[in-house]
Length: 471
Image (cartoon, rainbow, N blue to C red):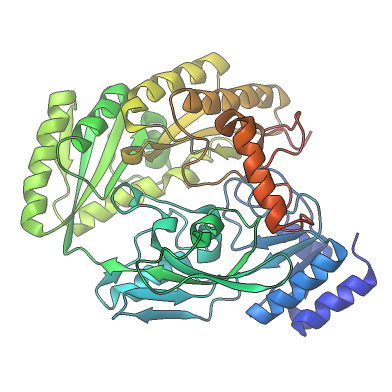
């Protein structure tokens, strides 16, 4: 419970009454994100400088007040949810710094900068910021750094951590540290940069990032591959990736997601199929033309019904728009969407598709499958209604079996969404007792008073529920 003395000290830390929110209506706006569950904060502060963050953290550390860093609330795992009350730090307003150094091919950014804006700014110099989560046009780079976000281009270019050269971080004691720098090579001591990226705000608060940019490809080519059996689609993915060709994107949509998109906003996708794969190749135009033919031959040999190559950029944009429409389209049927991102080795993709079909039938649930198939990062989404308690019990069991299946197949709980609150019950299953204990010891060393995003990543009790948080 925040007392008046604490609130006064927080107010002095930012010296701006308009950037400290206490009204119930404002607090409710920060009580949820793109995942599941609602938790009301006691206070919301909008920092706009590193010094303000330092002052806020020192007050929080003194009084053991939980701090919850937040970008635009697009997290699908519960990352910024204030599960123990306390203070939400809203970084969405701190977007003033976006500097491109074309000679060093880097970008230096504030935590509230929208991820898509970084790539847009880099484009003016013939450069590219590769990480491209579907929420890039609304998500902040700070949130992407905290969750180690990926995206469709992750197949060829990797994820957020692969492009972070250096960070400015405020520690739980209110100290400012610099990790990494502006150089591509840096092997001085422990790699604290990689430790902070993906730590979901549990070790410190990122106040600035130095990001690596890469040359923008000369051209891209897009193709749609149609399958009558989603298992054949899984086999095609493996065959393409062992053919000597590395697409920049390789996305899959099952029939349920295709139909949902066509009903939401028709873009001309075939609905009498079990799945489609959207493939993007980038590089030199001549090379792309040749690789498109090779990919077509490989897919037809594995059992594809048809391969359609986009005639121009407009046609390609239409196909990629369809992929981005999946999430808003599938929630028209029922209001609650549980979005997972269990990731498996590429060789296990066909088996994962089989198991997902079985889980869907076993629990009689609306399960839609799409995602970044090229790197095994699938997005099994369950469409439900949290008011239907009987269905939610089946959903609970189905989600648990999806995670268990992914780990059995040599995979992981999360490829890009993070652990947050949604996946904490399964951390021991993947890491083991000793592995989880080592992470807990690291958290305790960095944050002994446990004020940095508590209630995330680590299970707080053995009976923690997965999705039934509102009962």
